[in-house]
Length: 407
Image: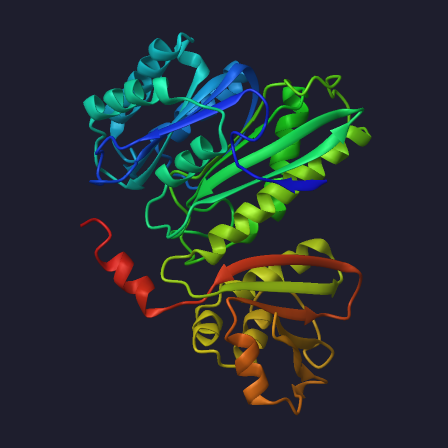
């Protein structure tokens, strides 16, 4: 398993393009397209919010009824959420326009949107954007990078990654891109994620691999406790690596699952670290828990704590807030038996043991907490299970960004 350069165009048989359609933003790219040279087997996971955007409903139907897709069209700026029948019709029209331009069936086109809720899409601009992108489609790394930039909203940086591995002498690549910065919370957060692979695999196993992996990756991040209407992760597998089709959970399936986890974990952490207004990626690792579910619950509770997030922003070793978040998580434990540590590239320091604070250096703790990636390590001393969750610090800028988001 090795990391390679690129994102959605890293795997064989995928092209991408981007354009500035002027949907909401002026002077920047705001539409992207991903196209597979051949029909790709399809899997997807979607928001758990009862209020689902039109593109979510469209893609859910394509995944369930078609099981394959040729293309994905994405726009940023307007979410096409809470837009009624008109919003659904725009999904249809977008897919029709892309299908006509690409020479594929409408039902082979997925759509995704992100941005302001309640606004209708400017269909003429979307159609024009599609026509502009099709001639630009390319399998270059640069085209993938442009697509990753075009789907951003309040994000400050693009997010992509790719890995490769061997399956019976064939090189298989998994690459992905995502966007997400605010309205991020476990159980699918405000994010769009697109993962491509040239692996040959059955749709049933592809869907199972994605559904299982989301639990330990995208479902383990939080920025602000809000779950969006548009959350979508799409996984396409076009089989162009030339491997024998995977139809059972054998060693080759496990290799793919490992690669998928690496891609999704990397993208999830990039989103958490780029939370709106954030200055630091905030990770919580729970070790030696009695059950996996308890480990996940405890880790999530800490990274979701607004007081702890504010302390991380202030580089303040306020361990009481961490202990408090663990205590209200709903998991039973003995607070006098656990241990707490802070970690970063600057080192590790133990801050709590045997029910009281250790004799730690506040200066050293502040130094550790001043790095761009900070980890709280929680040793439960109850068993052998572990979990990790990712968030970010809570800053003044978060409020500023969301106070005038629509304008």
